[in-house]
Image (cartoon, rainbow, N blue to C red; front, side, top):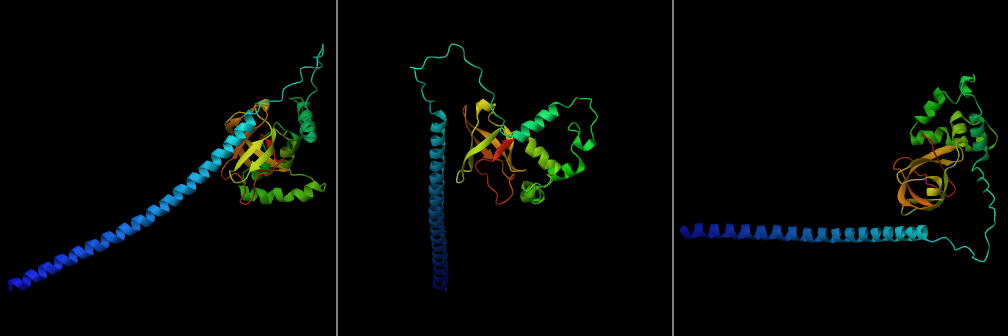
Length: 241
């Protein structure tokens, strides 16, 4: 009887040990697979980081490139003529700004033409739309607007704003925008602006730390552009809230 009990106990111990070893082996196998997956993810992330660093170094070299030296043999003029004023980026914007500046503060104006009043109801409606609705309500009117049809009040305000800068280059993979202006247009890191394409605002950008006198890098604010839309070269940067 004792031998039978001893044999049963020994069998239970062996089964327990075998079960433990089986579970441990399975866990070890899963850990190895997870480690392999983690290594691949880390390798992929490192490759992406190296690509971003290389891109930033390339942009920094462009930003830090010295201006071409002037020809020493040319004598400086005795009296330098005043530099001509830079032509406005948008003639229509210059005309609209000049007309607004010429309006006396106390001049009576019709409510729909008075720039001193807050936005009218239809303007507030468009400004409060989401990105998708704004595209459907405003951006899809490009053909009629370009064909000579009247612009909406919001489109008139957007078109009248002067361009602060233009997109010079867009790196799709890195999601970085290079603008053709920098400190020469008083741009500073952290400034936020709107992107204008034709008669509509299509998104918002923020100036990054990479900035010099004649160009700078900007990032698209997440969620500010409709799905599927991307920045493009020659899109305008404007101050529009």
